[in-house]
Image 1 (cartoon, helix red, strand yellow):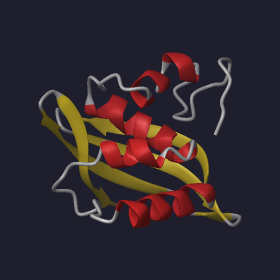
Image 2 (cartoon, rainbow, N blue to C red):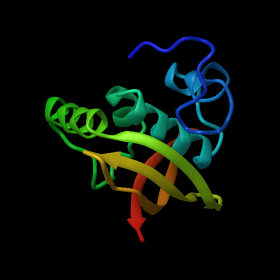
Image 3 (cartoon, helix red, strand yellow):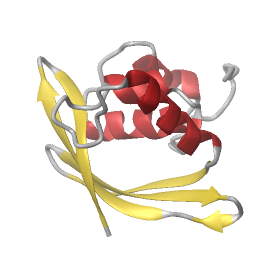
Image 4 (cartoon, rainbow, N blue to C red):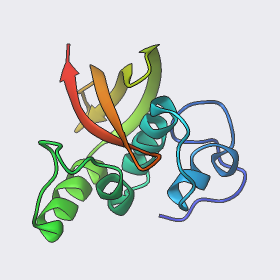
Length: 132
């Protein structure tokens, strides 16, 4: 998906994509779990399956050994979803609780999740989430 320099970030921060999540998508390490969570939300919105896979912890139950299947699952979800809103509700040293506003086939599929992150060699990675 091509995005121009003047587009607001899909993570709904109110900042330009080039100044918000794009640097993380291009390889800069997210300094906090919140920054990584926002970048992952944006990656889903932009159909960037590689970023989702690269930022998933090796011990995550969401991680799949078959990369082709995993990519297909991520893209199937991302292409069928409108990423309408993101609200950060709470953050701790290694968790982010957020509300994701999503629509699929004209149905509201929004959810609240408390995501857990772990750091490996200075890189934050998504482990798993608990849904409310």
